[in-house]
Length: 138
Image (cartoon, rainbow, N blue to C red):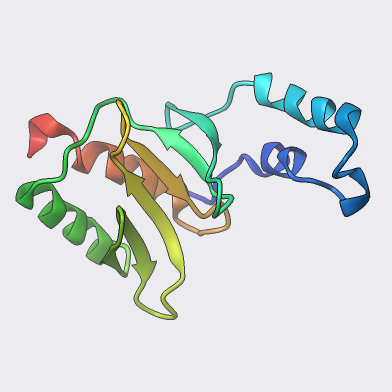
C-alpha cells in the first residue's frame, strides 16, 4: 500500500496566503471542497487535525483504551518500525527520528485515526489499525 491519496483535498483546505486570511469569499470557496467526500481503505475522511493538520479518518467502531488494545497497538507499532507515545491519546512515532506518523483518538462517540499523508505506508497502517483495534478481536 502507499501514501495517502488525499493531497489535493488537503491542499485545498489550507490558507494559500496570509493576504487571504480576511477574505470571506476565499474561505467559502475553500470550504466547498469539504463537501466532496473522500475515503481511504473504505474509511471516511472526516477532516483535518486542528493543530497537526493531518487528515483524520473515522474508524467503524468506538474505542475505549484497555490493557489488551494498548498491547495490540504496541505490536502494530513494532510492525511499522514505530513506538507508541502515550500523551492525551496514543501517537505512533518512527523509531528512526521519532517522526509522528499516526495518532488514534478515542474521546468522541467514534474513534479516529490521524495520519501523516506523506508516510510511505500510511494506507497500510490505516487498514492495520482498523483491523487490529476492532473491539471484537481483542
